[in-house]
Amino acid sequence: LAMEKSLHTSLQNNELYLHYQPQVNQDFQIIGAEALLRWQHPDQGFVPPDQFIPLAEETGLILPIGRWVLEQACFQLSRWEKEGLCPENFRLAVNISARQFEHGNFIDSLNEVIQQTGANPDLLELELTESLLISSLESTIEKMEAIRAMGIALSIDDFGTGYSSLKYLKKMPISQLKIDKSFIADLLTDTNDKAITETIIAMANHMKLQTIAEGVEDADVMEQLIKLGCYHFQGYYFSRPVSVENYTELLKVQK
Ligand code: G
Ligand code: G
Ligand code: MN
Ligand code: NA
Image (tube, rainbow, N blue to C red; front, side, top):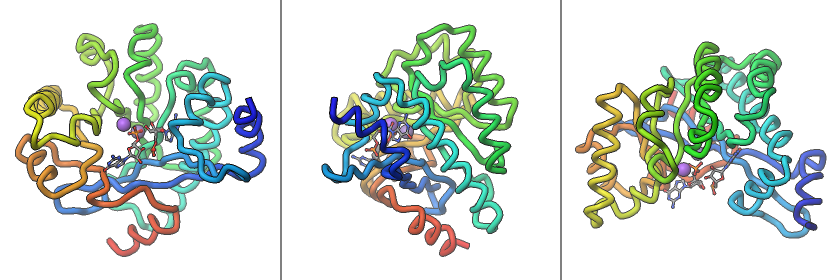
């Protein structure tokens, strides 16, 4: 309960901030980033997101917090583009929780943030989890189409760990599947993980969906993914999530 109370005031007290983890192609060029929320608690220090995000979802605080994340990320995206730092086909990915997506105001809120920040929607991507794919199919697809019509891309996060039905996937205006790191960790040694990863990539390629592998921690895994037909990567092998200053520096170095 104390945690809930302090999460409630974390926004006003400027305790939340974003880190950015690079996403790269097979030439190690930065093609994007995932924005990842961080909380520096005044007494408890750093609180990991897998502790406070579920709490934010349960309490509904994910609505104001998620809005703030979207604003921050879009402001930053707008700055990077103005400074000419975004490489071609750059995308900034923002995590959206099911509760946020399903809220009646989500599309309006997204439009407001785009207007307010001057972010280019063509450079923005939303990461959705499979949990929302099981709620009302019709309204989910309608919302997804409205988002796509704005130019924003949609990616399915942690793909393969949730309840996704392939029937739903077929009908959804998705641009990318993000292969969950639990399949990537033992890709070279676990034949089941390899089979699953290979199948996801093959299916995505047939459906003209992009794939990105997360949790890539070494060169051998990257090489195996390339053999399987996945050319976009995120993971500690390339970079941990870093501060906005450090990420901006990486973009400058690449120019
Ligand atoms: O960085 P990592 O420990 O960084 O993040 C843990 C989990 O927290 C990730 O799986 C991610 O889905 C979730 N997460 C991180 N930032 C956000 C955010 O801004 N919004 C939501 N809804 N989830 C986030
Ligand atoms: O939203 P999502 O679950 O995709 O968030 C990505 C999570 O994965 C974050 O917690 C991030 O810190 C973490 N992460 C990113 N790269 C790696 C990696 O190479 N290995 C591991 N174990 N975790 C990673
Ligand atoms: Mn994610
Ligand atoms: Na994930």
